[in-house]
Length: 270
Image (tube, rainbow, N blue to C red; front, side):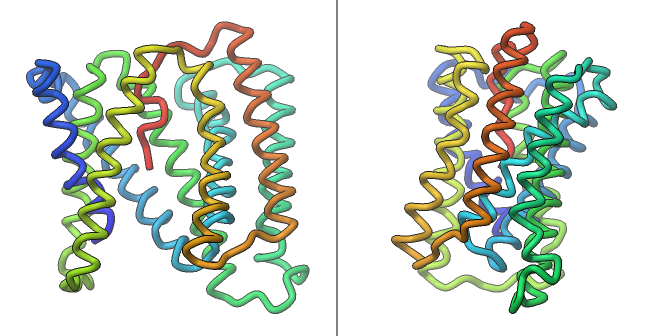
């Protein structure tokens, strides 16, 4: 239900922006509807897992585990897109996965004394969200070969909304007034964020902007502390640092090899 509102309400600012720049036709015309449908289903799964994990683990921990998505993207791109990855990037991926292990090991092993089954499930679900997010990113890379940027954005929201709406018979509830505003606000802010992200990629290439993704950890720490009274554990901070360092190394390596190109939708997944 939350995924539906996040995707469907976001269509409003996206369509308004397409109208403002005179690109409505480019947003709706597609030559690969099947690709958009699959991308929407995968992204809906990623958001569903991500939202579920937020109900089981602290916000900084879910955010930090999500940083494993770029590492998984590197691996999936080898098998699904035929990209070449050499020893330096494979080493960074291995180190990054070590950081993920540092974060989630206390949730899944005897090292985590007092960890509930709910928290353990949350760690697994958060990791599943990162995997699906990586799969969606690879899918976007494939779609950019034939599809316009705005078409990828528009059909992502349509397909994701449809996939989420299919769960209507399985436990949706009528929100109260506050929850209505929260759901609408989540959708509108997500749509505006998509527009700003797209604009940023018009002004700079992906390799310049990608490191800013990791600023999410700062926002997550501040938000979690101010709104929910949550503070990350030492293991989470250590693991997040390892994953971020590995991700930045991969990014710098791709830039040096000329593999990172301007791609407005490289991170338009949730």
